[in-house]
Length: 374
Image 1 (cartoon, rainbow, N blue to C red):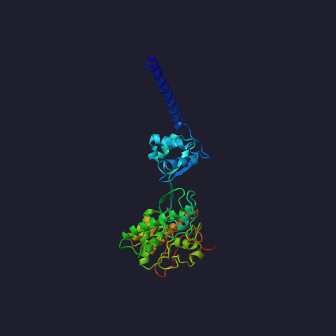
Image 2 (tube, rainbow, N blue to C red):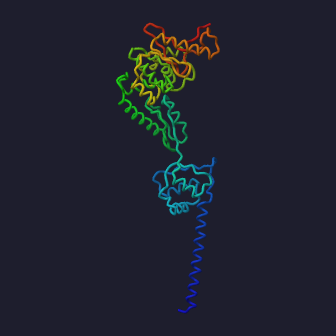
Image 3 (cartoon, rainbow, N blue to C red):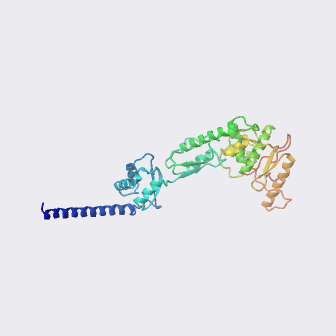
């Protein structure tokens, strides 16, 4: 082969190599620019696009989901970038908020690191089942109707993580399951001092304790008072049970009327002996533990002390002294002189102070008491 021919082939090879290298450089620059370049703008206001990636979806399905949501421009570019970076084996399912204009790289980082949006819903202790349904109905990410309000006391007060598109019925099922599991655990640890005879009775009494005080440290003491009253054959005389008979678990929003105090309902513990037929709320762990293991005590009465808590008493005379102090606090709040009668609504406000009850034949005094006419 002549020198000229060999030289020509070498020149052609070098030219081809240079052309390929240039093409490769241009391609890499193009891919690089697409990888880091700003992505599509969010279609709706707010600067974010919400995308939910289902569990088990492959890179192709994820790319299609992102393209459909307007987060990326090209499914092929997404799949190529995911494959070249090794991200295709690390993409995580969940709900994502993708910023408007996020680059392809930013989207991949978001999905690889699993920066999912997490949603929570809380059922507070002492809230009713009707209120629990209200909470779930007000969650826009949940779907489906609630066919019937769950039985009172069957839901566990707690904070639950929820997912976009989850049904409200499924959240209620989780609340019921948590309640059953926790109740079984607490019932197994009950002590000999408890007066309840079944887990169902424990929930009923605990729901009353829960509604009587919002102070955690008072729950055992309130539980002890109610335990002592039940053992002595005294009525519980708890104002929250009156309210439940009126509203079935919704706030009353005003004081209890005298006619409502005297009204016969299955829950009015001023009119019935023992426990009402159902709970009046969904009690939490502390109220249940207090009922199942009440502390030793001989207290039978409690009344508001003006600080948000209650003053407890063993005897009726001690209780009357606490009542007098509460009346004086009410006078001061109303700007009345000490000799003036304490102002009062038609009956106690919700949540009410602990009910007062005396020995057999002694008139029950409720605080605040209705002012005399005239």
